[in-house]
Image (cartoon, rainbow, N blue to C red; front, top):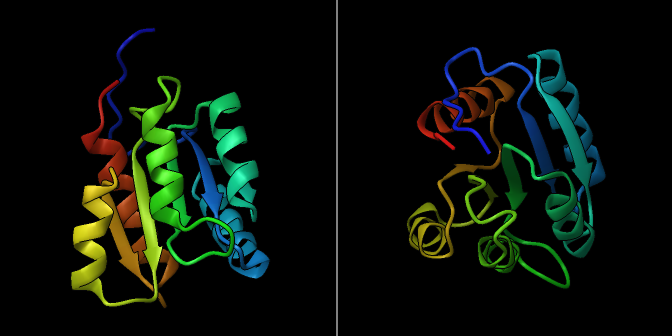
Length: 135
């Protein structure tokens, strides 16, 4: 595998979006695709982990609060697998940012954004994370 450094024009990066709210994943997918990214969305944590291992995205965006498995657990599962260990993770949270901040980074997350958020804010965070990652 070669090394690639993402810049502000990381168009074409593959992003996996996981949230148990289908309307939100649809909005995020539509917006990020409009910005030039390839997006796969999923509403099931278990299916998202399987998809991530199969497609090895450049970035994962996931909700923290979900049934069955929370976002921290999903992130930890991704970080344990060599196929997805280096994939950056952005958490979406509606909870207390200070508490989530600690848990997000401890579980392997790279950044988080508080719900509700603007699509422009999410796009800026996506660009920052992709710029900072070199694989």
